[in-house]
Amino acid sequence: MAKTVETRRQGQGIGLGGRYARWLAPAGGGAAAVIEMIVIMAAAMGITWLVLPQNPLLLGMGFPWAWLLPVILALRYGTLVGVGAVLMLLGGWFFFDEIGAHSGAFPRMFFMGGLLLVLVAGQFGDVWNTRLARARAVNRYLDERLAALTKNHYLLRISHARLENDLLARPTTLRDTLSQLRAVALQDAMNGGKSGPLAGAQPMLQVVAQACQVEGAALYACDGERVVPNAVASIGPAFEIDVNDPLVRHCLETRALAHLRSTGLQQDAQTRYVAVAPVLAGSDRLIGVLVVERMPFLSLTYENLQMLMVLMGYYADGVEHARATHGIQEMAPAIPYAFALDYARLSRLRHETGIQSSVVALVFDLDEARDALFEQVVRSRRALDVAWPVRNAHHRAMLTLMPLSDAQAVSAYLVRIEDMLRAQFGTDFSSAHIGVYTLSVPAEGAEEALMRLLHRCQLDGASTITAVQADGTRDASVASAGPARAG
Image 1 (cartoon, rainbow, N blue to C red):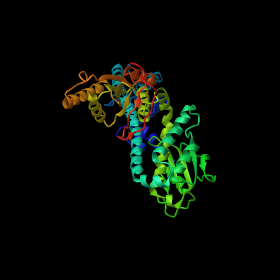
Image 2 (tube, helix red, strand yellow):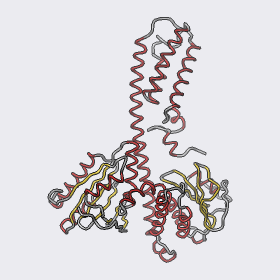
Image 3 (spheres, helix red, strand yellow):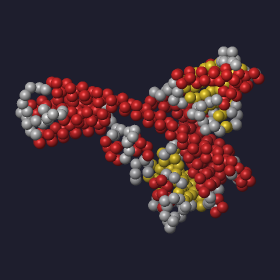
Image 4 (tube, rainbow, N blue to C red):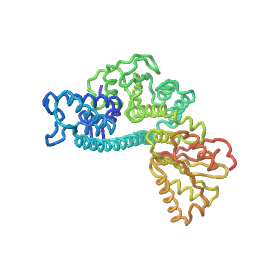
């Protein structure tokens, strides 16, 4: 099997791709880099000694050829490995001097100049390796957001297109189905998350079978590219998976929904399955496959199969992120799922790379004069931000989660909001008595920091008004966290 997309991405730098580029510019380090340095330098000095036994370090040949490999190693792995190559070259000179391979005094300027060259190259490699690691971390976060947005947009489109038929033909709506899938993941998180990567598989499969009218199916876990033969959940008559089936192979190779009309599948392929759907967590991590053996003929449509695919992806993302969001939602039950999920992701990003993100809270009094101000602030959020409008008995507030934004970005955001209020309503934060509170998303203790922010805003017992998702959709459900505490 070919390597996964994530493995290929980690093995190449910016602007490089393919097998040879990954060999020339590897992303690894540590013990492997030290071993590679020792082997390369020893082999190079041994070869030059065999070819030129009287000048194994290639001195006085018009170009300092001996420093070519240390410079390359410093660019690949950084300053420490480059200095190690210099020390090996220095040790090689003393060794060759001991056996009489060359004559003359110790070349001080040769080694001093070479050391400075290697240090410059190593510093360059260290700086760009750090920048590349930060860029990969940011891109990984953006990939997760893009995958979630894609699934949410597809769910929104098909929910409107099929609302009339589903309302009559099925006992549950799409919103009920998604709520049940999310409840499965949260229930496993409350139980300690001990069910493995396919937590709550049986109740999830029952929900999906009811929504997509599946009569016979089984869910199998995946260990990398290998399918575990024992089913973790099943609907209908039990059956064993055939890993050599054309649909199963096509699904594992393409990581896409496989059915008889799939692109790239031979039209005369013999299979006993109706469809095989991958269970993808995030954008490309395969954690399982759903094999559908029986389905009513009238339900065997492309839209229904795509619905099945998206529900499995929604379930996989919910299981993966339930543990991160459970702690936040347990402390603040009114917090929307999208806000808690991105807050947990950004806290993890801060812990891994140090990249800052921020939360900005604008608190308004409850009166008619500030309703227009509040609605304008709600409409003016950025596309990447996640907004949480909340209220209690005395205040309403707009909490905005700003990914990848430091204190300067927060200041620019507040200046833009205040300029907009001044231009449209002739007021500012001070004149309108709008409270401004900020929080830099911490790497540790993120839940406690968010609760302290709510306490400062006097929103400890707030309830969600309307949770504005990152893709612009709205979740109209209202969750209450109890009576408001006195400010």
